[in-house]
Length: 128
Image (cartoon, helix red, strand yellow):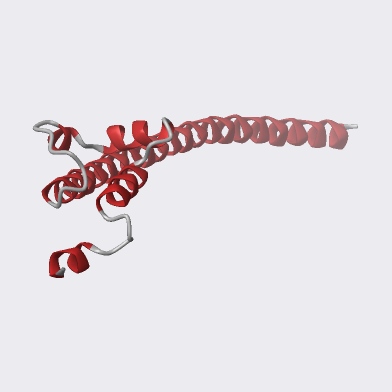
């Protein structure tokens, strides 16, 4: 009977210590989960910012190309000269033209077809 009481006391002590350790580990787990979630949010935010930055860079590059192509087409007489059209050409304008069914490529092709009904290149026309 004393032996049973002693074993019961030891089991209770072990149970108490296990419960304390479990509570401690549960707190640590919650702290690690919070830190992990914070890190994940930070990583996603950084990724979104990087994508937004890349989007701005690409938009700027497309705008620069659009201004250059419109400018060359105007200098060559393929597109009408407009004091603002080449300066205003940007990615948004190119997208607007694309969505309305008159993309830059089609505008150039239509203008060139009027200038060179035979389909000659600019160099061929210059030589003749």
